[in-house]
Image (cartoon, rainbow, N blue to C red; front, top):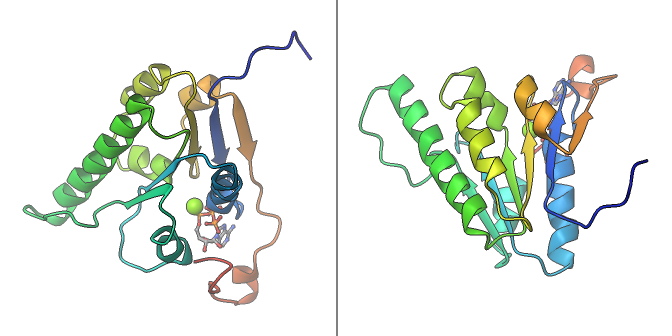
Length: 177
Ligand code: ATP
Ligand code: MG
């Protein structure tokens, strides 16, 4: 334990192969909304399936919830449009981070975008470094790049010890989506 510092916005990363990265981030949002804090979530996943969190978010005025590709105009081939949708999601995210109107922002599954080369880690790091001092950012996803882990204040590596999927149970409503 080193000397105590004044509170400031933190960068939190939930990574690893176990279940709980997104749900832990949403758990923090649940807690923060209870504190009257304005929150944002950007999901870097294609918005094909309805999820419980998306449905619920629509009912919460203090929560801005964006899903990659929803409301997006496709005008090129498949690979290009995924990249363009990821870029648009990042555009929304970086604006939200720099504006400072939200106190906690979740970049859900953003590591996916690095993996497919839709987004550059350096670009994200540069925006995180410029965030207003009261803004917390949570990044989730498997195989998080080292430079982000180095910069973060908190890194939780979630290990997969057991998952019902391995015993043949499909994803369950309320638990997984
Ligand atoms: P969740 O959204 O449930 O917190 P997560 O964000 O930790 O999961 P993702 O990699 O985003 O994990 O995976 C999303 C989906 O995959 C969820 O339905 C989750 O239950 C499932 N999943 C997560 N980890 C595993 C695993 N080790 N084996 C099988 N399925 C998994
Ligand atoms: Mg997830």
